[in-house]
Amino acid sequence: MITPRFSFKYNDVPFDELEKTVVETDSGILYTLPDGLQVECRIEKFPKYNVIKWTNYWYNNTDHDSGIVSDLWDCDTMATFDADPVKTRKNKHSVWTTDTLKLCVTDGANITDYDNMTYDMRFWPNETLKVANHSGRSGMGKSPFLELNRREKGVLLAVGWTGQWNTQFERGEKDVRMLSRIEGVKFYMRPGEKFRTASTTILEYENGQANGHNMWRRYVKDCVSPVGKQERDKKCPFSAIFWGGIPSDTLRKRWQGIFDEKLPFDYFWMDAGWYEPLKGETCAEQSAEWGTVGTWKVSKKYHPNGLRDVVDWLREKDIKFQLWFEPERINLNVEPWTEYMKPLHNLEDKNVIIALHKDEVADQLIELVSNKIEELGVTLYRQDYNIGPIPFWRLNDEENREGVNEIKYINNLYRFWDTLLERFPYLLIDNCAGGGHRVDIESLARSIPLWRSDFCSIWDNVPEGYQLQEIGNAWWYPYSGVGFGPTLGDTYNFRSAYAPGMTIRTWEHADPEWEVGATNEPFDWARKYFNEYLSVQHYFSCDFYPLIKNSKETISWAAYQYDEPESCSGIILAFRREECPFAVADVMPGGVAEDKTYEFVNVDTQEKLVVTGAELKKNGLKLEIKNKRESLLIKYSYK
Image (cartoon, rainbow, N blue to C red; front, side, top):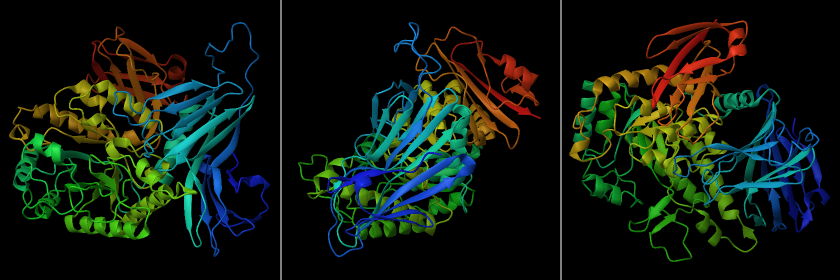
């Protein structure tokens, strides 16, 4: 297994050259430098999943300032692969081969059709590859989940930092040096100061990429995610979303329409705009003013009884409540509810971030949100973050304390989330952050991204974007969600959006045309396909196999499989895109056991195919979609 290692310089001397005492502890290794600064590398091993994780904790328990820590890499370790095959005239650098070592990178949530798409970078000896996010939000630009792969062997690496991270991969003939860190760190520690920096989680596999990623998904599901732990829901919600400025009496009317149509939602998702001092009445007015946050009092204009009456009425009908907040951002057009980080430049949009690097502000945040959860009966707390924090962190850093504001801010963000989960054992946290902008292994340990990209904010967006998102997200984590709509009736589009969680946008806004039934919605279709989705929803957190290489092209197919070994069943979803000339695709299903017999059922036609696992492994499975821009859903079982 890969060795947990980190590196830094202390007063410009490399860590390996420093005199220090080394003590093994119950949780890892404690290093004490001659001047008293301590670094504890806490190590966790998960042999069932072949995973190792380490996190560095820093302590200055002395009565004086420490020396200066610089060039800090929280991960600085090695992976080993076989050397490249001997080059021939037919094996030049411009040619891909099955023996090519690859660095697999996943895009972040960048509000494009291609969000979360994975791609491979060829990696040659004596080459260095760098990958980083931007703006201080861990899921913007690039995603902090990376992979080295050659044939059946690979290493998955997750950077555990919900701020600004940076990775570097340096290749020799066989060895690859893997480095990750918080970007721009150079600091001394004051007396009594303590904090943690980024974590590193690594999984090694030798039995193929899909098997490696499925082991990773099981690790995240079993050991990381709060979903299903304590009193929490065991799955993501299927919800109807409503803007916060829809009046309470209108909300009741719309929900009654939903109940009359027997639409099977389990959550009422109230998004932004429910708070003072907002006054807009139309969709356009509310969309223009929702960002004026800074106070968290329920608007009496929209909700004269404080909203709890609607929540209690819905709870009697087994509908749970999800509520939007954005407490880390303050708009200075409103009286600030707490201290904020003062900008050192002209601020035209009046938006600032709270001083979460200060413990007393974190304490205020904990009480603010805890009180609202209790006051409003919140089951699922949705936290947004529509601001890039880097300028505030860095412009407020002191000399030789670069990165400390960010470090303390993120430490207190974790403390805030951890405290909520401890106080409310039934609570789930939806980590939005502008749509998937703060997704990393540490945020996944405390939350789920139910709006995994603001691509979902584009009304009736292209279905292929959902397909690409699902393949990219499923490669790395088992719980996430999308927003769909508002238009109903397009089966190809709706199935493209199938994900672990989903919210329907059809009745989202305040204007009369968003009333239930106002646009002659196809309710028979909705009942059929909403229930179809619920019948397969649980599979989306099971083992995942991409059956066709992820492609942006509309001339291609998309196809992927979810398998649940515990029930000996699964599903296959396939899409023939609108310009695809091919009616048939031959795929090789994953997880097939030769000694089993498989029965595949086409959900639309009820056609059945019974085949042995041995035959499947030899011949694969033929998928057929006769018309362009249509989908195929197959349920299967085996025994």
